[in-house]
Length: 208
Ligand code: VGL
Ligand code: ZN
Image 1 (cartoon, rainbow, N blue to C red):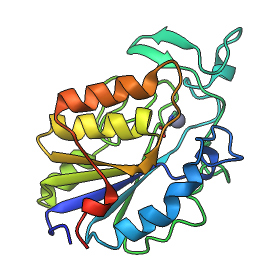
Image 2 (image 1 turned 120 degrees about the vertical axis):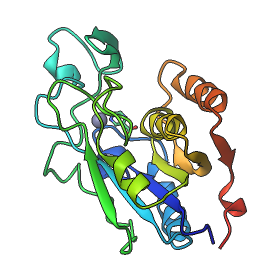
Image 3 (image 1 turned 30 degrees about the vertical axis):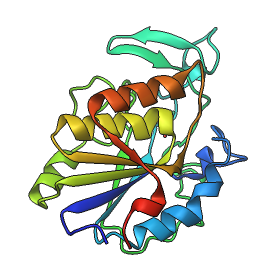
């Protein structure tokens, strides 16, 4: 079992990212039983929830003439536009019904500022506005962060990168993640994680 200074971050396993959802990730539902099994190996679990107001800046519908999966430039940098998804309080934003992690201690919501997206669980897309997760983990003496969930190439990757930046030993459990993979985003995310020193492992190597 990973020690008491380790945390599992379960990223955005929400209805809208599962097959049939507004921003469905291929096979997103396939990881749910594995994530439940992994979570039982950790004393510390944090769950993240993408949590946008209606009319959020990351929605293509907020930019007349633009379509989903196009990239535009915003004041904080490039932003991929998405179908409306994970609207606060909606069924689509709810955690997947099959997620069974009653001992998770914190659910961190992100992307709630109308004018800024937030893939990472640590910082909003401006790379400056903190979510508070760093302070929470520091105060709980967490040293190692394991990341699973959706999607590999956006929220998982950005979360893993920021964890490294804060000096956490960071492990991405590859078979417990699934990707959106738009415009080469998966290959790019893997390269960036590797460069940042994020270790990629198979779930079988995570001790029980
Ligand atoms: C995500 C796109 C938009 C994710 C969230 O969870 O990876 N991707 N919002
Ligand atoms: Zn989102």
